[in-house]
Length: 158
Image (cartoon, rainbow, N blue to C red):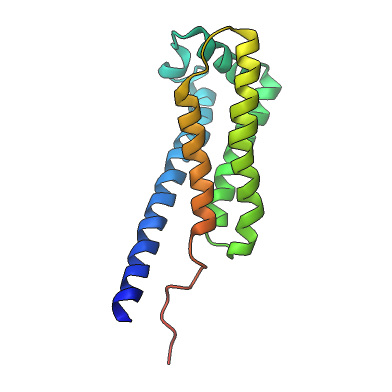
């Protein structure tokens, strides 16, 4: 029985590491890009210098739509990232609904709807890397639900 408990702890530790690595990656995007843009007035090079016309259109809709839209989006990104961190310490029952919503958001709103609108505006193939990025972000939310209950790995005092 001791070995199975050890394996469970190892699995939980690996899951926790992967989830927090995903949260850090999203923090880089959701906090790094807005802060960089607010401090410099420009977008990071890979976003600003995109050669693909379809990706240029997507970037224009996200980053150059209007000042109000951009500030609202940046606020959403930072709040989303802060919520991810907070939810990792919440009981699982409180993680399910927000995480389910965000998985839906990444696949339907940020995936299907973005694809539909971008292809209607600029003919071309929707970038596979957008699906991959949205999939990774959605998996992080699934991982948040899968995390063990807070305090479940602590030893009880006798």
